[in-house]
Image (cartoon, rainbow, N blue to C red):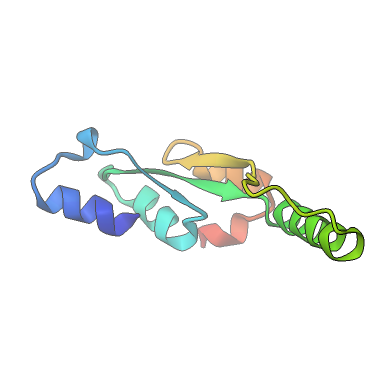
Amino acid sequence: MTGAVRALENRGFKPANIVGVGINGGSVAINEFKKPTPTGFYGTILLEAKVHGYETAKMMYEWIANGKEPALDTRTAGTLLTRDNYVKVLTDSGLADALK
């Protein structure tokens, strides 16, 4: 996602006119949020890895063991991290080490 944001910025788009949102941006997103001046990178969706993994394993088990094919479109919930909330959300989620 940051590549798209940088490309838009390099074409003259102002950060206030860009809304870049990624998925599980990790350190890339954190580095964007730590910059003193906001960029066009607005946020990233923090997935709950344990829930995501559990649901996937459960669906695969049902498919293999019982022939119950999973839905073709399966979505996973997440939390939007932004410059304003990333420290609190990561800390509350037990992921404060990612802030180092």
